[in-house]
Each structure stands twice: as C-alpha cells, then as structure tokens.
Length: 219
Image (cartoon, rainbow, N blue to C red; front, side, top):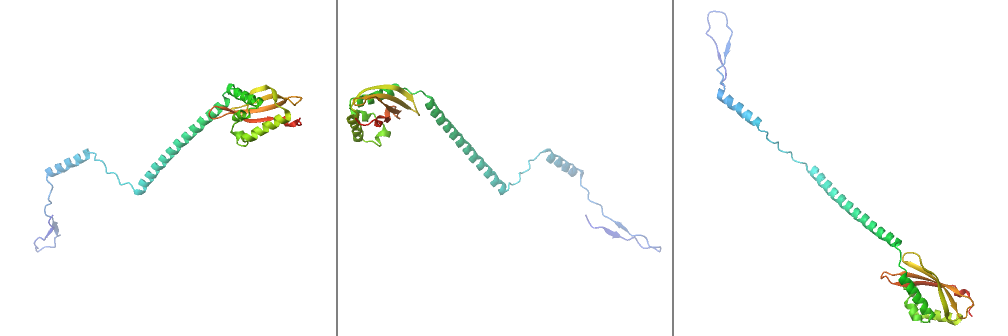
C-alpha cells in the first residue's frame, strides 16, 4: 500500500482551513481468490490428518523394558514353583502308597524258613548267604560261623524249632518272625527273633537276628 500523501488546499484570503489527509485507494482481494481460500480451508478441515505421536522419553522406554523383564522372571519362577510342587506331590503320593501297600509275605517266609533250616543243619555258609548288608557290614562270614559253632558247643545243636509269629509287619517293607528253638543241652526252649527286609531288587534278606539264649548258662 503506498504511503498517504498530504494535500494542502490553496490558500485564500480567508481564515485557515483544516488539513485533510487523503489516502490512496486500498488494493482489494479479488473475489475469486477469496473463494479459492475458503475452498482450501474447507478441504483441510474435511480431512482428519493424524497427529504425529510425540517421541517417547528414554526413561519411559527403559521403564517399559524393565517391567517386561520382571514379568518374564516372575513367569519363570511361577513355572518352577509349579514343577516343584508337582514333584513333591508325586513323591509323597508314592511314599504313602508304598507305606499302605500290603507286603507279600510268601517270599519273606520262604527266606526265613531257609535261614532256620540252614542253622538247624549247621550249614552256616548258606545261613550267611541269607543275611543282608545291615548284618554282613559288621559281621564277616568267619565271625558268623564261629558264633554259631560256639552256641552249638555250649548249648548243643538245634533239635527243633517252631514259628510263633510269622510275617508281622514292621517299618516299611520289613517283616518280623519269632521262633521257639529247642537245643540238645537246654532243658527248655528259647526264643529267636528274625527281621527280614525287602531290598531294591525285590529280594528278601535277614537284616537282624536276636535271641535270649545267652541268658542261659553254658551247659
């Protein structure tokens, strides 16, 4: 827009007249351009342009990674705890099932009878073969034979034996047998207790024996 120009009317032989400022004509926008501007504005408003997401701070990104890592660790711990509980439950189930399972006494009775028959026949090597590790760990074959021969010499050989309690259940896969034994030099019988236990292979063995024959003086 050109600057305004001050126009002073010619002076006359009269009093001073006020000065008027005359502005040049203002350039007006053609109607076509106005219409185009309106159409452009309406077009921009008609489209809903998505707003660009703001950049996520690095601290927030680190926090998100930490949370995800923590959730993974928690999930792994939950799985491990679940497996541990299942394993303990499985072991407890089989343990109590084994405790409540009735033990078959047929093989144990046969082993006890074989041991007693071997002692009665003075076949101490065979009797020693019927013994389990709890006995053989502390008693050698020769020690067992010497002990048995000493009792034969003192009280006489075994002449008769009778089972009193056969296959009484004890702890775990353990059975107890009690016998009444008569010897040649004794005036009355005495008692012998046998303990048999089933090993991991399923075989029964004599794991303990105890008698009260020692309370009688040597004949």
